[in-house]
Structures are given as structure tokens and as C-alpha cells.
Length: 215
Ligand SMILES: [Zn+2]
Image (cartoon, rainbow, N blue to C red):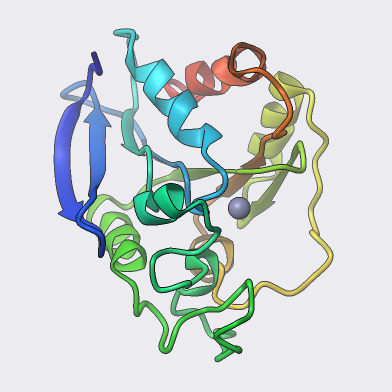
């Protein structure tokens, strides 16, 4: 049982549902967007979001969740979606570039060519989040784009994962560049480890969810 309102539901290329869920008081303060499974081979974000939503917790802020942005990649066990596009390279940023289709980081034929990318762009335009959190794997670090230095330090304290500002390679068309760099929205990337039990992951990250209800 999930305690949240369904805001939006679209279908992926393979006909799977992509959900936008909301938990919010009537008079909310800020809006926070949390996104899981941007990469299909990084499933833990969906688990953590759904685990949080299984309990009815209070929130002062409007919380929006896309538990699984890339259900096709999740089904196929691939980083990209069913078109082999890395969604984290498909955003219409100034530095988007065409890359080899066989590349693991293939950014699509055009910026925002993919349904999943457009759903996320729509969500940001429509709800104007004050903070965005995305789950990735497997590096066990937190990094950020945009004005999120203090927030990322809290995330680091909560999880025990170190802050890593530069991941060491360029990321044209990335979600962090689109939201954080070009729109000045604090955007946190939480890189989960891929070798811990679900209970241990939950223990390390559950206070992140408590933090975003009232930060
Ligand atoms: Zn990832």
C-alpha cells in the first residue's frame, strides 16, 4: 500500500507505467521532487521511495515522487531506455551533443527526444521544485549541481557518504546541468552503493526523507 496521490501517469515505449506521485498538505511550504531509476540498472531508488510511501508521515512541504523514471531500462536491465538512450544525457542543455549510438552514454538523436525526459521537463515546468533529489548507483557519494552546498552537506552527514563535487568527466545533456547549472535549482545526486542489503540502504537514507519534509 502506497500513501500518495497519483498526479500523472504516462506509458513508456514498452507500455509500462511511469508515475508521478504526490504527498502534500494543503498549505505547503516548498516543493521537492525525488526521482528514482533514471538508469535502468540502478533499481534501489524505487525501492527507497516506495518504502517511504508505505507509511503515512507528516510533511510541511509538497513532495513529488517519480519512483521509476525508466521502467523499460529496468525491465531490460540496461542503463538506457528501450531506445538505448541514456536519459541523463538527453536533456536540452547548452552543452548537449550528438554521440555514437553504440556509446553507453548515448544522448539520443535530438535533445529531449525521449518520453521519459519530456515527462521530467514537464514536471519541473509545472511544479517548479525548490529542490530535486535523484538516486543513482553505485559510488556511495553525494554530489550536487546548482546552489545546494549546504543541503548536500546535510545529506552527507545523514548518509555518511562523502560529498564529491566533480565526478571527473563531462556530462553533456545531464539532468544536473539542466536543473542545477542552467535553472539554478538545487539538485542533489545521491549515489547509493550497490552491494548493501535493502534494510541497510534504508537505514542509511531514511532520514533524507524526513529532512525533505521540512527543510
Ligand atoms: Zn546512474
